[in-house]
Image (cartoon, rainbow, N blue to C red; front, side):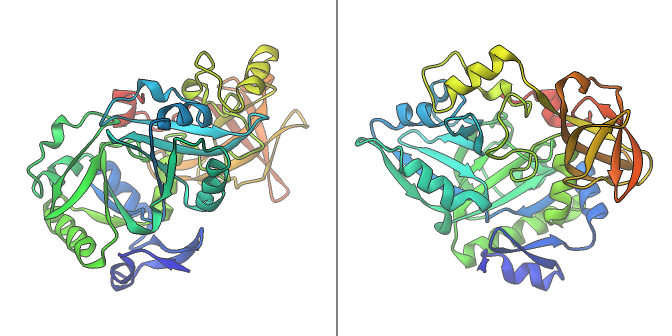
Length: 369
């Protein structure tokens, strides 16, 4: 099992460690509810070093990325980032990812569970004037998320963090360490990502400096458990649950990143066909009463007829009720529709709800490019 540079600190903090995509990762420290609320009200520090990073260089890099991703890489300028996806020829999602324009190269940030498969797939489509490097093992990544994140980190750097726009990044020094500081996030809150060399001593210096700078704000270390509840409140997809190679971006609500009017890309023909005939199912959000929870794979029905399945479900600390997402037949996807979810043989009433569930987020105010 792989370990991040912060592994010893997680253990010292009493984190419950789990195997996640082959990495030893903290699922929680003092509790998912407490960590979730720290991010919504103040700030949380996440170790997300398990994510994969690929560097794409060469004179044909932009054209290559246009071919293998669904968003329009041509709109990126140095310092900008975009959310995108890679599809196979039938239009299924190989992975969702971030694309950063680094000036002389691009960086792709991919899901930990897909690092090997993504690299092999990208390698199989390389052209002669493109170089692809898997930099995952030599990079560490921390995320600081929450309303106080800017105030916490500004203490540690001369970079004016307020000038980093949403979905942009700058190179700078923070806590004495050179890194890429970007502003995206997976929680819906104001937040930053810190990409640095995976040297254990400098990495731990950064972690400790952030925790010290955040003391006055009540910063908390946050594990994968709260990361999941935070992202689900925003209706953000989790690869392997809500999207995979059996789902396409249009039915998954990712049409906004799928530029069907740009030059040809892998999966475009299939997605144009889907758009022409109309999607047959749609990824929707739903709420449940009280603390009833629906889990991945649970059947969804309407008037006794099967119409879909749950892909993600949890208890929302912000809404104080069960929430989830799932695919249902497109004709039954309207918000306000009452459906039934089979929870271990018991039919629980659920209401299809407009995403995101959590409406007070920084991401909603700024919009996602």
